[in-house]
Image 1 (cartoon, protein in one colour):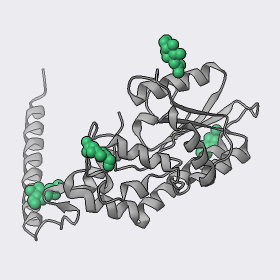
Image 2: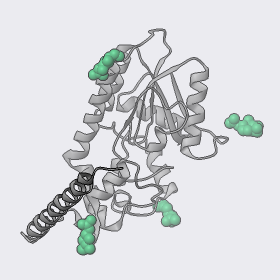
Image 3: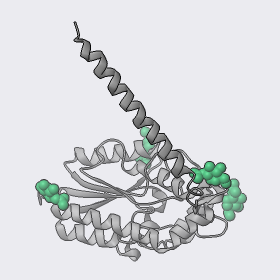
Amino acid sequence: MLPPSYHKDKEEKTMRALVLVVVLLATIATFSHAGPPPRQVHNISGVNCLSWRLGVESNNIRDWTMVPQQCEGYVGHYMLGHQYRDDCISVAISAVQYAKNATLAHDGNDIWVFDIDETTLSNLPYYARSDVAFGATKYNATKFDAWVSEGRAPAVPGAVHLYTTLLSLGIEPVFLSGTKSEFRKVRIANLKKAGYSHWKTLILKGANDTGTAVEYKSKKRTELVKKGYRIIGNIGGQWSDLLGDNAGARTFKLPDPMYYIA
Ligand SMILES: *[C@@H]1O[C@H](CO)[C@@H](O)[C@H](O)[C@H]1NC(C)=O
Ligand SMILES: *[C@@H]1O[C@H](CO)[C@@H](O)[C@H](O)[C@H]1NC(C)=O
Ligand SMILES: *[C@@H]1O[C@H](CO)[C@@H](O)[C@H](O)[C@H]1NC(C)=O
Ligand SMILES: *[C@@H]1O[C@H](CO)[C@@H](O)[C@H](O)[C@H]1NC(C)=O
């Protein structure tokens, strides 16, 4: 049996809760009428481009094929302005801090996996072309391959600093890229020109490397681990560089709001 005071207590509590809710609703109503909603500076024609970019970078938005038309200008300003540069450098600094503190075996088997596109080499000069529009036009493999063949992609901001720090710590770089192996010569020349001259191995996509980027990169990383290498870190511009098997003890995501690779 519950004491009679129980029900009375309960009633009083309910009343108090009700009063609280009413006060809260009144407060919300007052403030919501206080003025117009905050200005949506990044909301162009119904697409909030900053929200879109956050969704893309956090892997909430997936399988997109093109930058929304309305966000071409936003992405262009981001990529060409100081924010993209600062964001890349910030990622590199985090990776350096982590690497300096990592426990290493110093037996030549500590490795760091680098993706190439938008990780070590930047395709920004290509994406800034008016017909490419920072990814707001349909991907054209013929055109992109022609750009890769030019072999003049610059380094991604901060990436050479990370690379040289890793070398000084005794962590061996491994390049793992979805670039087709037919571009091996020009890619090596480009890497050297951009400031990367040494690596344990450079893995490009062969004719038999089918499947998604996640599958391909997982397979290659697993082969490295089976050979006895320890993946201390893994850095990439796409989530598909960082997901899957043997992703590494830590992963670092660089910004890339221009294209999506599954
Ligand atoms: C963006 O603006 C449109 C109107 O132009 C509005 O309907 C929409 O709710 C806004 N979206 C966001 C996320 O602010
Ligand atoms: C450095 O490593 C130690 C031990 O592994 C760890 O406790 C600490 O949180 C690390 N510090 C940073 C800044 O990563
Ligand atoms: C791709 O670009 C090439 C070279 O500029 C052009 O000839 C071709 O028509 C383009 N393909 C598509 C599908 O737009
Ligand atoms: C691809 O696979 C085929 C059939 O197994 C083989 O003959 C060929 O040598 C392989 N090519 C490469 C580049 O590994």
